Length: 265
Image 1 (spheres, helix red, strand yellow):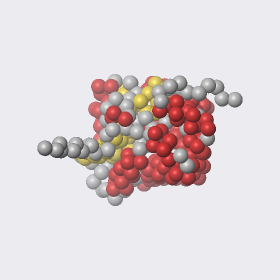
Image 2 (image 1 turned 30 degrees about the vertical axis):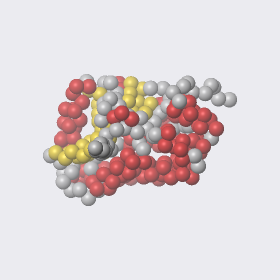
Image 3 (image 1 turned 180 degrees about the horizontal axis):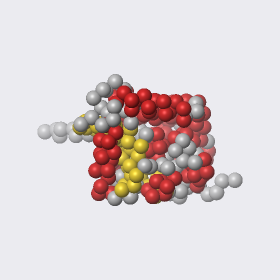
Image 4 (image 1 turned 135 degrees about the vertical axis):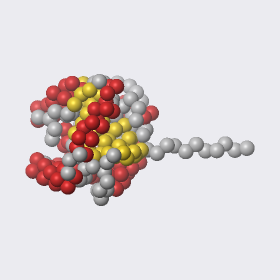
């Protein structure tokens, strides 16, 4: 008698309640990596929300201990060619920009680590509520591939000096420092994260939806100077870094769970 194959749970979960849509990245064992599958699921969900008049606010979160650890380096390593890697990052950049294009405000609910493109995802959301256990980092530079695409969103939240500090050092930033620097709106005890996030969502959901949508659209029109060109350039830069010797050596070290290569010249 053959065993019944086990189907993997959905990569992205959706729950709708009282005008609030909660999207949960559902690969906790892999720190909710932004694989092509995850990017596709997020893009599809955001596209469906564009014309969803019943949804007033979107909450984006991750299952498990971590929010999102960024891209899957094994997946990128297998692509090898810069043109194929660039295509992956173009897909990610499109998804990120869709968050700003949505008529509904998007709140990141950050319960744990948000690294690299995961930190970018937090920065790209309109608002963010973090657990006091949350941590943030753009650590690519340590491994040989500068976090240029995360830098687009992070630099639009933090001052230039703070953004460059994160990007150039790769150091982990705790939740309270992230609040001080402007990456998140609130830091709350871990066991009150759900309550605090939903409270903020409901407060916004009570506002006139057409005005919220118009206000959000106008805000980004005046505050973001040519983000599409910034993302195009950053996507090309990060794709090139993954095919460069330093980036390939760093990916190998990361995947093989060993220390990164020594100091660069």
